Image (cartoon, rainbow, N blue to C red; front, top):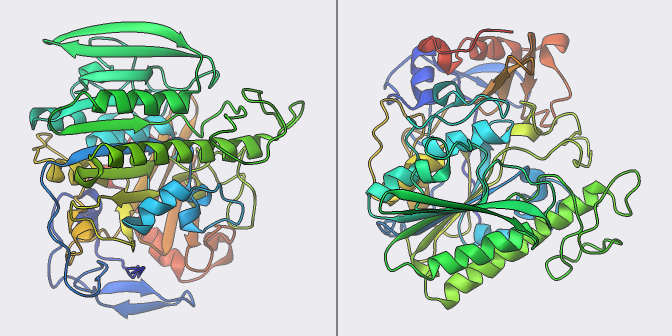
Length: 491
């Protein structure tokens, strides 16, 4: 059974809206009247519901098991258009393993991340917006060692911690690597992207007695398969609670024909062949989806292995994308556009898949949540489940445990925020939405959309007019960094 939470548009006064957006305070009761947009784009008065949570039928589920194992899966350049459980694109990759997690877990429909990988990953790991942790663009330097990560918190709480796959937050050993940010063990691509899925530089780090031992080799096996095999090997050696971040490079470029044992996309080329829209045998759009399907197969293999080993019933699986699908592999269908993908603050660039699964650990089954969620909310969720304590002075993340347990949620988010900024790349873009109205600032240009009527963001309302523009104007004044004077200089 699927239960979908309602997602109406609400606009509250500036002060209380900002509290909700940044997670810094609780909404004040009895405040000013809300402004709401109906499906005809008319502005009407309204009142806030007491909760936006999905209400499951029957009795509520049991509470989440404290300190379960945590498998945190982060996929690369895979938007909601390429996870078939979301059913948002007829040409989506086929992802039965991920769909199974959604069918037996909780699927979040409206989750925003940053438009590119490094800022988004830094926010996932710290629970803080990019303007706070300072990594606003992949062209930036690194995640500061002063930032507290989820791995550090869970490590302190008694978890063994490991990461497999893509880091992309710094390569300076002793300062900015996984070993410096709370991971006992790391194996993967330290610098981030790989040049070839069948020939890539693998860095291994192991922290023993406070000393980091590091080695580098050239790996010639398929990267996705290596990540899973090494995760299984490390997990099998643990005797207490563990937390694994499985950060796949898939489906980021480069595009190669994956092993035929992992996908059946009907590619013409041989395993390992490079794909290209020009000279290659297979189009990159096809190889991309085959790589996503190969990742799905390997994730399914890992879940099956966990079940066989008796670990699955005590493991919380958190699956999320770092940003939307790259425009070079989006199949334009009128809603998803090649010009509205990764790097942009349009929905195709920031709306990411987010699924939580946990048999036996109190997670609802087969529930879809339509409420607004920031990707960085995974941080506080895992902190709470893992029995940890965050010490940063400002955390933007909000725990989603009430959603997972089927409880009423009294302080659901009213707004979402995303940003991308680089002086060197001349990039200065950000966006805010309250679920229907959406305001975008893109290198000095302002845009406004009604997402209820125009999910593909093709009818810009400042140009065509309409009451939604009044709401967009109010949204434009509610950028969270303005309140603390932390916004980067406008380009």
